[in-house]
Image 1 (cartoon, rainbow, N blue to C red):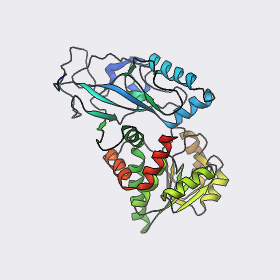
Image 2: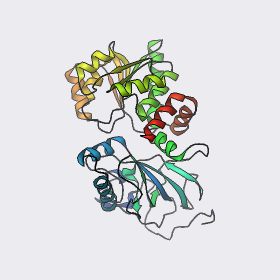
Image 3: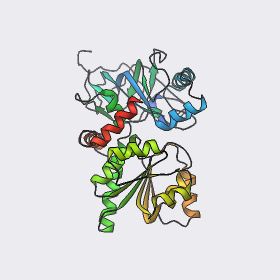
Image 4: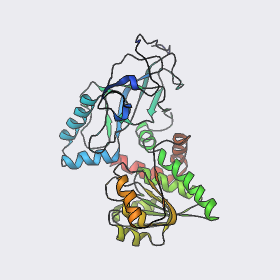
Length: 354
């Protein structure tokens, strides 16, 4: 393309939120759609990305791996079928998708995203609303990990978000960090508010503290002045988290067992952050949180009905927040934590190596 913006030849009405790409059902936003239009022809406000790698979100990959008993070929086949049939990666069971990295191939002449042809970028919007076409049958992926090498293209809308990948980091590592960059940013905001309310250091418990969003959330909470408790399910993860030095206290507990979790956390946390990619953690998180505290749910496995009714049934005076994945400046903040917190880099590196 020579770096020149591509003028769209498509005359259909364009919506900045992508309504024009919805094939069915009519009248819904792309995330709620059953099928999206993946045509490579871009509208004036759109951007076309050449795919390099997809990153499936943890809850979605866990569900697929469990369903197929770890059979990589079967996992790959189902992911490909979802993308082909829906025009996006939108797991119908978990309702979640992931994100991607690739190279900007074409930019509509009215795109507000500030991207240029040739830039390598990570999309900071979910694959559940991103028009996606795969042309290689995911042949380069063995189905045994969340990161998926892929050829094809994706479309960004005027209201989409993307971050230019840093030149000094491994793209796979950057992708893994940016996939969950909303978690540390929101955690920092909530912890700072709690500190102001309490007039001192809040106590923060992170469920799934050795995972991607969990380790970043622990780092962000500590930076915001909190004392931190990292909750993990196994001794192996406990040793890993302790070695990383991100938590003041590391405890082993089943996050789906409310009584055991509350007992392990001990004195109620002022802020509890749920980063566990399995269902059934809502009641334990509520029970482990002090009266007047806050629970942040970042897991796509969360049942918000269970959370609301559970809090009511426990007569728990807690504020519950849905981590929506976007906070202004979230990408830069997450990458800065990666660069300045050796423990974060250590845990992400171990996860990618595994």
